[in-house]
Every structure is written in C-alpha cells, then in structure tokens.
Length: 221
Image (cartoon, rainbow, N blue to C red; front, side, top):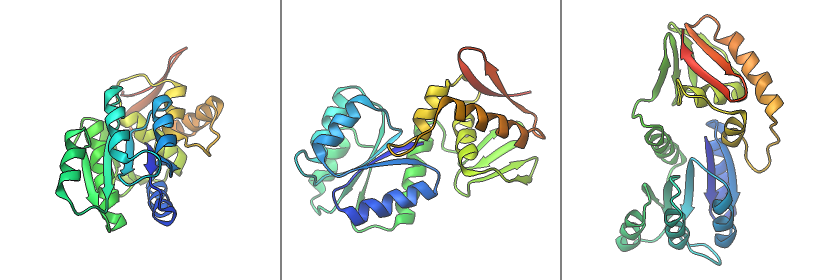
C-alpha cells in the first residue's frame, strides 16, 4: 500500500504520485538519490518506483544498497536509457520489473498492481474472504455480489486486512502502510476506521477481530 517514487523530473513525479494516490496508495516522492537511500534505510515500502538517472546517487546504486540490506520491497525501475545493459543490470541487482520512458500512466498502474499482488503472494486481482470480495483493479467491494460503498481510507484498511487474512496486524503496521510523509494518521484514527468498516461489512460472513494488545485480524465466521 505504501509507495516511494524516486524521480527527479518534478512533473513526471507529480503525475506518477497523483495517479497512484487515486488508486489508493500512500505515496512519498523524493528527487535526490542520497535522500532516497537515507529514507530507505529507516522506512519500509511495499514498492519503490525508481528512476536510474538521479542526482548525487544513481538508481542502480540505491537498488544495490537496498538489496544488500535485505529489504524485500518490490522495485520498478524507470529508465529513459535505450541501452539494454542497464535494464539487465537492474534486474540482476534485484529489480522486479522495469518500464522505459516515455510510458502511459495506465501501464504503470497495471505494473504496480501486479507487483503488489506478487508481494502479497497472489496473482489474483480479486481478494476474497467468505462472501466478501474486493476487486483491486476496479476498487470495488461486494458482499455476496452486492456492491458496498466504502470510503477511501476504510477501503485501504480493508485491502490491507484482506491481503493478510487470518494474520494479526498491529495498529502501527496499518498506519505504516496507510501513511505517507504528509499524512497524519494516529492509532486512534485506525480504531475509528475499523469501527466504521465493521458496520459496512456486517452483512458478510466475516469478522474483523480485535486481538487485545496486538491489533486486528480479518477472518471468516
């Protein structure tokens, strides 16, 4: 759910970030290679969208250091370089996919969805638990085939829970996946979102259980 875009072309970075935020991701943007490396040392992201040509530290070195630290974030390389050698080197260093500039945002979005599914251990665009189904492409939730209207923030929490059905997620883990640099989401806010979400999916045969002192888990009743 959380994405870091490392791109020094401001207009392109803004376009990518805006597109991904519309799709429900929490997105941070950094234009400086050294700053990106510093952030990746201390924060976890589900996906890094990484340009190769960056000031101060190039994308391949960022990728090399990221994998050397054992980080498992998916990495999508963006490159304007025509030389296949750079793409091969990026994949060999641990990138998961690449996209050559110029590209259409709809293709970027599709590749991001595919990488996120791969990270979650599934190739299915439908996340399901009992009668509850979430289409990750259309951002559509149904209960036994009937549409359920869920606001964006609660929808993102539901997606996080559905990707880890049967596993306890702490409030801190949920906040980490929901929030970018500019977001201010507290643990108390997560409690409120969970409470509202329970009411919205009460017609489904699922339960969002509070595990005292640990967090929440989604399971079939």
